[in-house]
Image (cartoon, rainbow, N blue to C red; front, top):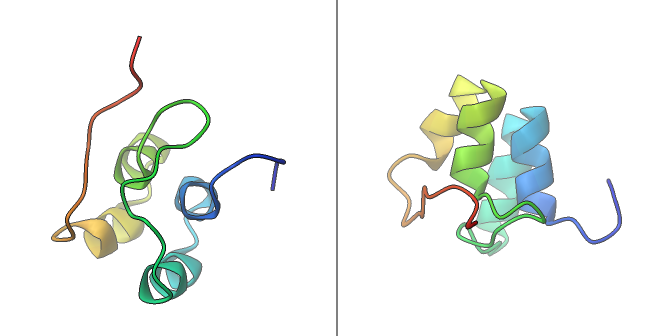
Length: 68
């Protein structure tokens, strides 16, 4: 993991479904943006991790991309 990254965004980017579930269960903020401004859900979508997207779907999530 890169210093300064958001753990939930990082595991979503790499497609780690179990780690994503564990972080959410532990209270991770599902709307906290990564360094590039993307949410965990958008990160999983852009990285092509459908299983993580399905896990995140239905949560109170933001899906917007980076702000420019």
